[in-house]
Length: 178
View 1 (cartoon, one colour):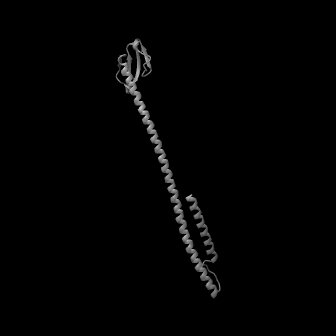
View 2 (spheres, rainbow, N blue to C red):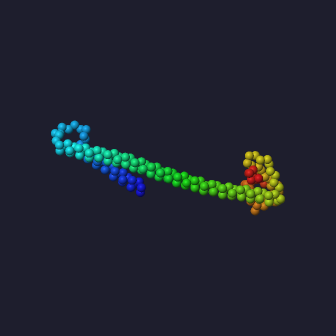
View 3 (cartoon, rainbow, N blue to C red):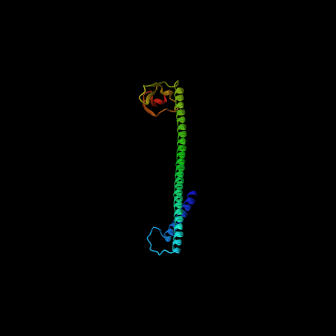
């Protein structure tokens, strides 16, 4: 809206400037060589034309300054609008990042809950099943359930069965869950 109005004003000023330049050309340039018989009336007319030409030049100069000022304002308004759009994009990006951080925190909380439940399950299973942990290797250790008849299928497993050997069930458990 503001830019359209300023564009219209700028076009109007430019057309006025063009009209004034045309009138100045019609009046003639006092610097040009012309062989005109000097009569009193011609001299008076030349003075009037010279005065009008000076007025037109002054007006043209003022209009040119106004055009430059309006162009500067248009550039400033366009720059301000670009800055506002950039700020809106930054705010939207920050909002998206904030939402991602909230989701990440929720997932981290769920992960902590799962680990706590796994630890609680392993604590509850300890009296029923004798767990023997091998030393940690990076992220894994081995747990052996020594009495097959105490294995309860309703108790959730921490990891899939790795192998079955005689009276032992061997599971892989991540070191972090222990």
